[in-house]
Length: 230
Image 1 (cartoon, rainbow, N blue to C red):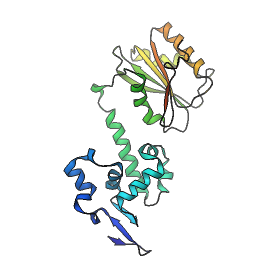
Image 2: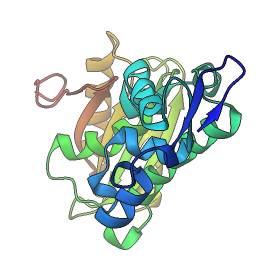
Image 3: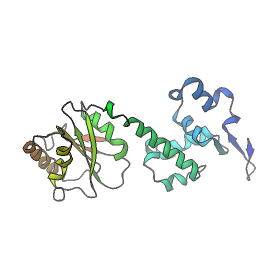
Image 4: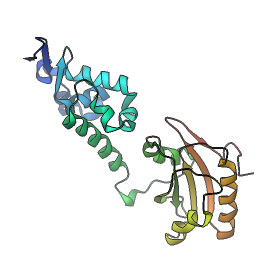
């Protein structure tokens, strides 16, 4: 360990006993055996006066609301956390983003949507972190496999502003058989928007399977609630 200017020791991972060090535990047991705090500790490498790297990781998770909270937090907010400089904050943000990209990297293993929860699981990672309102369209093939997720609108999403033809433009280009619409801010226009999209889908022979409202840690299927799909 080293000693800081305030005379309190700064703890390093190497100060831990061998069988408690996250890197050694990862090597011997695999990354799945580590807690979130231990994984963050590997990125941090060193602690701060009074806290080792694992304890700093635990504090970050508690203060920021878990990994999803760290993901949602603006970079400047992460920088304000005790023990994080620009390099460490960037490493944590990059690691979380790499984990997300890995989950969608292989087009030959396109996910299949069998239920609203399947679609919500794919969409919520990004959408729950957005501060501005977004409307996205998930394009599906005949087997309900995801072709692409299109970011269609940014800003206020209302029945008067949405051009229904734009919702289906990419579906026509990619020969999609069905779509799922999702946005991240509920509004009084949600049911009217759903009905307009559903009617257009029937005319264009593209199934509109659902309209999802994505929030922070929560989501709602309008179809399951019978809103706009009756």
